[in-house]
Image: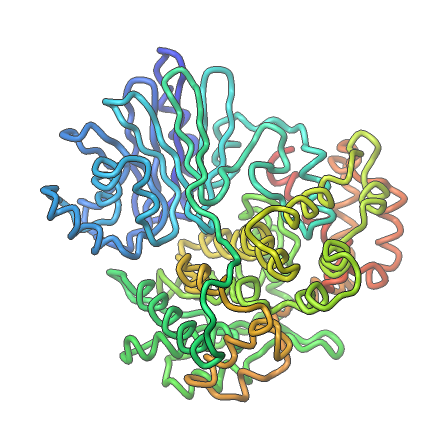
Length: 588
């Protein structure tokens, strides 16, 4: 797990090494253990290392193989790298390290661009192929690892976050009206290749991009998930198959040369992961949960349930309580750590949790993805059983604002068409899913999941050099879940088949509790000093000069923030505050 960056020139000019050097500090928290730069004619790679596999110097990056004439800079973990290594050794390849990075180099040489289809893991990389005179960038199937890029003249810049691109001086302050529409309506989900900045893009998940010496590019998709019913199995058989695939996914994610812990909220998803971790490795298992002060009747922690699981499986459990005095000063730090602005208030919770967990471990497993993959959200029954158009059902159950309200919130220069609504409509109409609920699940798995919870967890954990692995996003498990009949997922108020699997390994009290979430009540209701914080951010001179939001709309939200909540229970005022503060932190 690391931070990567680089510069590729399309002309014969050499890359200024100082540019790569400027980018590296913005990646330091992603890789606090070591750093490296590799310069050749026409390109330069930079790397910050978090040592997880092969802790020796042999695993250092950027990595080159002079015999194969290949160089790589890479971020992530390949969970099946030992199997690939054995296969490559049988083909005659030799290795000087025990790292997964070297396996990637040899795999590319052996199998070409298609080598990515053999990888099981989370990754973003750039490979220089000297013999073919080209570069290959790639991103994992579920977009767990980020890869941003920008072009300036005859040069291509890439990095693990936008902050590194900003330090290279290539981000322009012009905002994308399309991305703003997504941000304000589609719950801050801005699908690739868009970002808030017009000139900054992100590589789509499950794709590779080849770049020739002259700058010619080709983007190739190597994976998609099909929602097809290929087998007629009983509920019992589906339950067994799901549990076994999840068991294998957890085992894969325990490959490490350092101890692996778990984030334990006390919900079904994280509890299942802890149970299977304890099964795979019954030795000392460290688990962590976080809680905040209550606000009114809104409880700020789920310690009761996490305690049940910790006791059941004998984990070394740590409960981290954050009082309000610590929360407010850390909001700006958490937002500064975001590669893109994110509205979910639990981002700050993950930031503070990661700070504490990183003091004891480098790697944790986390439960993100189960709701999107196994139908845990409230809108899936509405889409499946609704009498109206499925797209309408989805939008009204998930979107934060209508198109009309987005136009009300933004100043006229940023007005445009209903791009978010059109995107969802087109996604629902695409082939590969027939049932309406499958269309919604595909959209959430391929788009929403990647640019909301997955991005949030990656950014907040890597802000403290903590690697988060997500077993529910093993692509084999995702493909299996897609083939499960929707009624077996949507029943029991969602995640029925996962709950049946859970019955075999964890207490029923945890499985059939009221659905919880990562609660941070203070940022949901924005009272007292939190409301003052939002008002101060939105009334700064920079905010006024930017002239992004309609002042009348801002005043309406400030006067009664709790009357202007999204259908998902978030604060519309908080959304504007986060975006404005993030832009300020980016120097815009």
